[in-house]
Image 1: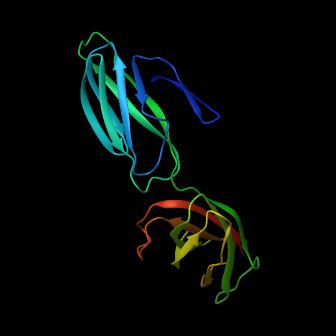
Image 2: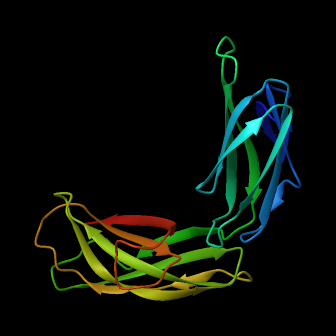
Image 3: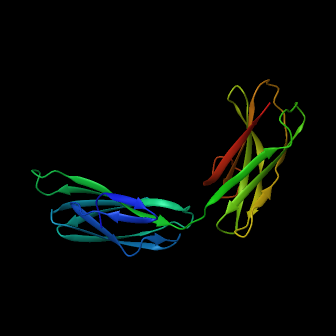
Length: 212
């Protein structure tokens, strides 16, 4: 039920509050619809939010709302937030969050290495990155070099196919062009939306490794 909660071994223990929240289940997959019921005794306007959807509900003793989990939602814990604006201004308002879990895509970088620790302009950066995924998925990898000055140089992008059955060994290769001396960082990110524009897409996982 609604109110404050404790997260314990993937089980949420919700305590009774001014507004109680119940959902039809605890874990949802991308594309599922979350059915939520809100209960309480203080009348007013109840504003509820989840996954960029907002509802303003007339509230006396109960109200309900449904939210669709977007198809591109990553694995994790998300919240259904609520705010009660009492009809009687003499009563204080209240707000809270009800936690739910989404069993979406989850990717981790298990290891990152370069073939050497020092590069000269014109050298080829050969990286080895091990990824672990809970789903078979093709993502777009985008790579940069961060210079000692803090400037980012975009190196390029490529598609990466991940497997849920084994680690995926990805080996991007790019020419090092920086003329700056000092510590650089090879930076990478995996994105759900493929495309040539480095400023679009949902970041799934990122990482980096430093070199001279």
